[in-house]
Image (cartoon, rainbow, N blue to C red; front, side, top):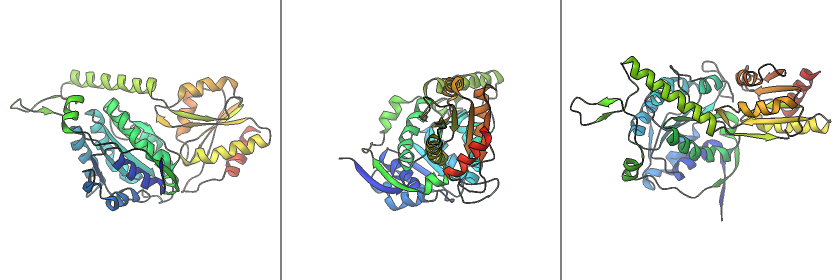
Length: 358
């Protein structure tokens, strides 16, 4: 019989890490995601599974600890919130350049700067457009429930090791803090060193002077070598777009208008769709589950039947740019957003939608 527990989304991240064979968590507390580390410390997985849990001295240290752990073929992860992810961006670029797998959780708060500890979605650009330097991408998963916070840790590790690439779980403060019933899946054992050595071949760019050890690095001083690496990475990102786009639709079959929203805003906009349907307006909802790769093809499929689309976000408008790129001017794309940690009601979104279609 399945086991169900009432817990916060942040707590679900921690419990899932333990139950899905994570070898090491390295993090630093910051609101609104501190419960991830607090739960791990309470659970003491080092006594049961052997998982390492360490509070680093900073977010910069924690992301570089992931580099070390991933270099050994270990399932490693960290979590933080918006300003902390800014400090991790250099390390994320290094991990992507060295083709190292890891899972990173960002429970987004409002910005810029220290901003507010209230929820936000203003890290979309940072997550989906690279954030750090260079031409790199991460798979970006956007949970909208505590259950998905739990499930996406396992999925995140699967995708990270499939592509030898960082995977980012981009949650918001609402999803991180709200409590819901979560179904716990069966425990997965940690990988043995023998399994790691026989299964995974890490990208290397050279040998130490004594020729005895591989060097795992993102550095390539030879321009031709560096260009070949970048072409290889771009092919990998195209594979992500071909094989791992995830999304959900709600009442889109006959929709004449569609809202695009993710995370907590997708849940709110489901109610907005129901309000519109009650008034005879054929409104649907597209929820991107992967923000990268973005569900461009599904938007293309829907556009011929639509009169308008609207992107709804807890930001000044970031995902709306990808929606507009996908639509390519074929129908109007409107935008509604709130800032400062203010979460709109379904009714407020509905009023904004009706104003735009008049």
